[in-house]
Length: 425
Image 1 (cartoon, rainbow, N blue to C red):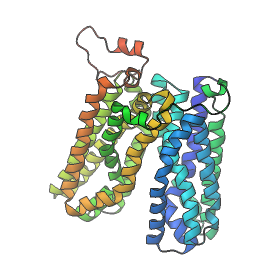
Image 2 (image 1 turned 90 degrees about the horizontal axis):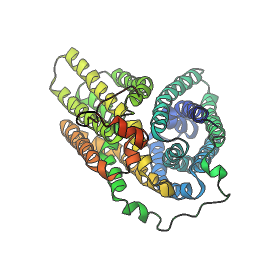
Image 3 (image 1 turned 90 degrees about the vertical axis):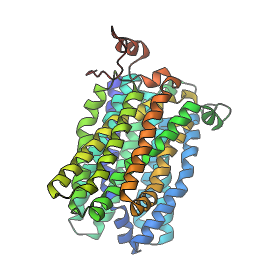
């Protein structure tokens, strides 16, 4: 199968996955509140507990990836989530709800390390950056389309509409599993059966100091990613007295920007060292947080509105530079034999901040809105500088989107090396 065909099948899987997820994600709390009759606070507590417990599936997924291959874990995770979603209509009490939510949470937590390892298995070099960029773009579009479909179904004002949505999401996971299973990998021509895992387990990841540092440096950035859904809505409506509707508009601006611009931006970065692009993205995040902090000093409504959109545009620009490129950098920095374990450790640098962000960010916001933004800016600035400092210690192939010989040519101008020169690639 050609690289083009592989990418097409992969993206088809991503589309059906994201549309199904987009139908359900905005309604997750409301769904169980509607089906079980439990208060929203209790529903939220059950879902949070399940998400925290499911963190244990992350290191387990790493071991399974190295032993059975990333494709097997990706497909297994889809099937697990599809089974859980099919059981959702049966969850009429808190106990059953917790059981089915936990099953889906295990599948959710195993997904990031397995799918990134899968991408690393099926494409190399600049193809990896472009596929990850297309994935981010289409997932944003798919999530939006799924949300619109869910709104259309719920407009029918029928109790069965909620069940239609979760069963449609389950069907999306099953279709994605079929797409991913049909994509060939190098393991298909290797001897059958599980591959012997290298001795040392997760100790090998701990000994890989550059990779471990790369993962730790991602933690402040992961908290930064959460501001759009956690901090910004409260900051705008409570601190700046902005209209509630502005929150939805800003979220739409961000998702539309990623959907439309991620692919061309990533193509423009193929001759830039990944570490430089990731560092620049984190640096722009810091600028956006400083801009958000400065909004509290503005009194004119029109100027404030312009400042909000300007800061959000900066945030989106940082995400465009950082998102897909960081994923490609980390996947390349992980040794092939233990890529699953390495990616599982890296994904913890996302999972833990995502779990803690609602409590941590709201507490910081309550203590001092300006202080929260300044602390976030300082954190991502440290990440930006740290990634640059790691550049020489990371595998060469992980730093350059192009194959090493092409990257050498691209970075060998007549005068001094200029790594931030961009081209259309």
